[in-house]
Each structure stands twice: as structure tokens, then as C-alpha cells.
Image 1 (tube, rainbow, N blue to C red):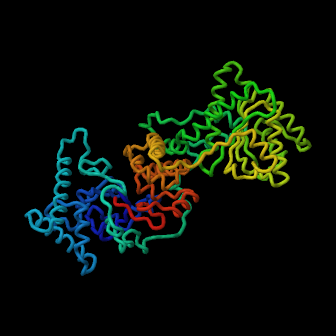
Image 2 (tube, rainbow, N blue to C red):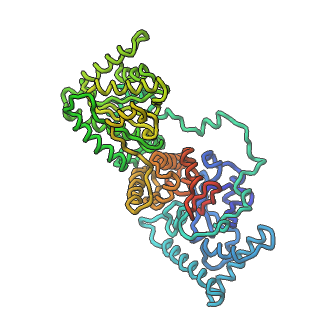
Image 3 (cartoon, rainbow, N blue to C red):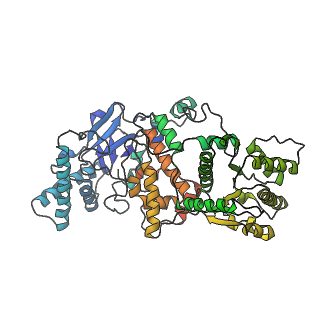
Amino acid sequence: MRWQVINDYGIRFGYRTYDDKVLNGYRRRRSGCSARGERWEVHYNPYAPERIWVRLPHGFVEVPWIHVTQVSLPFTDYTWRHIRKTVARTADRDAHELALARALEALLKRARAGHGTRRERTVAARAMAAAALSQESQTRDTAGHVSSSAPVPDIAGARWPLDGEGEELPHGLDGFDEGEADDEELPMDRVSRLLDPRAEASQWVTVGAGGVDADERFDPVSTWMGWQRYVDSAPVTADVDDSGWSREQRLDYHSQFVVVSTPAMEKVSVQLQRMLLLNRRHRGTARRGLIVSGPPNTGKTTTLMELGRIFELADRRKHLEIHHDRLPVAFVSVPPASTPKMLVSEFARFLGLPVLQRMNQAGITDAVCTALCELRSQLVLVDDVHLLDTRTRSGAETSDQIKHLGERIPATFVYAGVEVDDSPLLTGPRGQQLAGRFKLLRNDPLPYGTQEQRQVWNELVSSLENALRLQHHRAGTLARHSAYLHRRTAGVIGSLSHLIREAAMVAVLDGTQGITKTLLEDIDLDIRAQQHLLAAPAAGSRARPATRTRPQT
């Protein structure tokens, strides 16, 4: 599938022109799909390239190749590309396309008669075999099958490949022509670049339509109310029936989406359980804790939140009758340029304690420690600890404040931050004291070197793909391109989730309801992932970040 402009001469790609009277009334017109540049949805079968299918407002229509009568024998897109490489261009574009069609007919007839070169006979034999399979599939009974005229991804006789499947082609010989860029654009005399806010607004999906912000108050998880809503909310699972879902429901589902368990998350979970047991009867002040460190977007905060939710749910089961009087988990984030008073005020804000202007740091600290002890808090999660710069006076004093809270609250503390092991937090006398009590766990991008590492990555990709709720998505598509996904995302789970979720939403919005590699190529990732892709492209990779090759279908 690809998106094309319907011009006066029809639709042109792969150095073939398709036209028919059914396109009258839609030439040089916008499709109404602004997400695809106002182009029209086009499908074609590479094993029967003599026709294409175009989705018009009233449905799909079949459009033939203008030179289909010049070729009497079956051929495939592979055969056509062979002809393009062997026939030199000696005339204008229209005349050259006709010459290619006649040369193709001559080649097929020579090969069928047993003449021609060995290469020509091989090319023709492949075309005949592929066409025979396609014809056999199209002539089967229609029970349980789709008609060959219906241009859907599993059309009988058609194989709708992703970009990257099938034959490897030299750049410039992949079915698309460098000189055909004008065929991809709407004619300039019909294009208006004037912004019409009202017309644009009609194309937008309003965020509040069925979303969380429509009638719910937003409370961050760094507040008691927000944390309780997060713990009480039902996690997204792949075991749902989406047969009757609306577009809004599909968008909401893929916006929230599932959380996959990574090896780093499993390791932190095991270590956290051990630390909780280690500190359970500890009466001293030097309790043990954990620090989760790693690059941005690798899932550190998600790990903290999910493990915190699991622990609180386990605590509720253990204390069914009195769990409303308990607060087993506290979650706060270190504010930028934090001071000791600012940090302890974050704890007070989480607890809902009033912080008056006249209250000093010691008074707020006493109130916070008293409340957390009375509420039987056992796990304190502190995010963004990399913002603490112990080289400054305020940063050093804030670090001391965290240590003081850890000594007064009988709980296990878990910190998370970006590259904490390289930050000032663990340097100097204060840092050495912290390093002597805390165990550091890395949450790095997932590697893809050994067979075991590739298996882990493939399992994560498959888990995310199995959770998709798209009506026409072909199972196994993403798993088949797991190596490509690793190159695009550099093994960062946050970037992977972003790529798949956004692609799913685009597929919902444009009505295709399926993810292809072509669609993935159109998704721009976060700056860090893009920079990594530009800095270290894989040798021999078909994914070219600087100049992308147009997809085959």
C-alpha cells in the first residue's frame, strides 16, 4: 500500500501509469486525509502489477495499467524491473514506458519459446510461476476467502509485503524513479497554503473526546490522591474484546497501552523484595536501599511506579480490613534546584499536609515523618535524584535531608535518576556514605549482540505486537522486523513503545488499521533516538535515516 496523487494522466509509480474513467472527478483533488498529505490510498499486487486498487469515497475501484494490452503473457513486478534495467531510455517518458511494455512482451514470448538468454528464461519462468499461483488463488471458491477485486491486505492471490521483504534492489531500481518526484505532489495551481483554522479543526481529534481529561481531575502520582488512582486503575491488558470498539476507544487504548516486563525491571523487583526483607526488622538507622540508574527513556520511572503499585496491592491483600488507614508506598520527585525545605515540602504535598509560609524546614520534616510512621509506610520512591548536585550548597544540604528522612522513617528507600552513578550524588564524603548503604542497579538500553539478547528483544517486540488492537494488522509483522526496530530505537524501551503506539494511532486515524514498515519509517522518534540512528547506521541496513528510499508497496 502507498499514498498517491491522482493526476490528469492518472496514477504513476514504478515507472508504470495507471488510468481509467473511474478516476474522473477525482483528478487533482484532495483525498481529505490530511495525515497523508491529501493523497489517495492505493494497493497493488506485485505478482499482478497490471492493475491497482484505489480507495475512493464510495469504496475501492480497480484501475488498469494503460499498456496492459501490449503484454499478453503474465508478468510480475520483478520481471518489469528486469526490463527497466536492460532497456535504455531513448525517448520521452511516455514513449519509453511504451517501449518497455513492448520489450517485456518480446522477452516473455522469447522465453516461452525456449529462446533468449538463460537470465531471460529464468526471469520469465519466475513470472509464470508467480502468476500461476496468483491465478489459482483467485479462482478458488469464495467461501471463507476474499474476492480478488477487494484490495485488502489478505486479498486472494496477493501478497502485500512490507518494505524490506523479497528481492534486494540497487538504489534507484526499486520500482520508484528519482525523476518522478513531481508525480508525488499535488499540482501547485490547485494547492492552497492559506491556513483555515476552522477547516483544520475539523480534521483534529479532540483530546477530551472520551479521554481522561474529559471529566476527570488530573492528579499526579506524586500526590496521595493521584497515587491511589494509579494503584486502583485497572492496568491495560491484551486480553480484551475490541470487536465493537469505536475509533476513540482504539485511540485511548493505544495511548495508555500495556507495560512490558524488561530484564532490568525483573532484576529490580528481585532486589527490592530482598531489601524489604532485609530492612523488615532493622532497628538501626543505616537501612539499605536501591538506586536505579540509566540513560533517559529506558523505563526507570515506570519501573518505580509499577513495583510500587505491586507492593501496595500486596499490602492491601495482607491488611484487608485496615488498608484504608495505611499508606504502604510514598512517591515523590526531586524538584529542580531543590533545597531541603522544597524537598520535604514535596513529601508534605504527597501526604496532603498543609505547608504554611511561616513553617520552617524542621517543622515540616517533623510533620512528614510523623505522618509516614503512623501510616505504616514501608516503601519510599524518590524519582529524579540526578537533579541533586552535591557540589552546590543547596544540593549538598538536600542530600543530607534525604539521608535524615531515611533515618527517621522505617521504610526502604528507592531512588531513580539519569546516570546517577556518574553524577555528583555519589562523590565526596556524602556520596561515599550513600554509596555504602545503597545498591546501584543499571537500567540500560537492551543490547542485540548475542542470541540470548536478540531473543529477549524479540520477545518484547512480540509482546507489544500481540497487544495491538488493529483490525487489519498482520500478525508477526513487527516481530519479523525486530532487528530494524532495534536500529531505530537503539534498544531503548521508551522509544520502542513510542514508535509502536504512534504508528498504531496513525493506522487508526487513516483507517488502514495495520502497521507496516512503510508506516514505521514515517514516524519521527525522539531526538535522542534519531541522533543515535544518524551517528551509527547499521552496515548494509535498508533503513536510511538521511535519505529514505520510498517503499515498494
